[in-house]
Length: 233
Image (cartoon, rainbow, N blue to C red; front, side, top):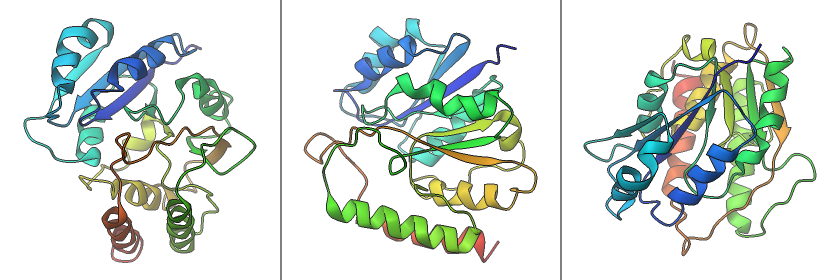
């Protein structure tokens, strides 16, 4: 078997990184792949780069007519995916596409249906940056685990890999960063049907000066979504 891999890349104002990350995805050690980019109404020239340089190299580019958020971009990209397995890839350079085989291995060997790439599991390289971000990630993951009865180490990770069949069971509702706890809660309710694994990954985090976007308000939204999708649904 040589399953088709759909790589979904949401992006917003990533003019400095969009070309190198797409080149890295193209060169990643996955043969049968489609690359779907969803531009979330970028205003920094990213759209021009996508049209002029990237479009001939990828399977599809979707241009949102207004900024809606990462969750909305993923929802749109997944609706166009034709692969057997779906990988979520950020458009910055924090996550390395060379690690796709590591993420795919539990699924390809039949052990898993969902794989989370954990920044805090194992001995992979990890850029040293913000202490309070690390604390916040740990608290959000802990709170999510309390609600889902999972034992994840990194609920907020970008690298999430799914069999296509998993997304046939639910739809992403959250438009912004709240989709992380949302899909974790929804998958947890299906854990008798789908097997969930984690693998350790490297992480090359960036500073706010380098374009990092997530902030404390997103943490508040994540807490709300943990409660919403675990208790009130």
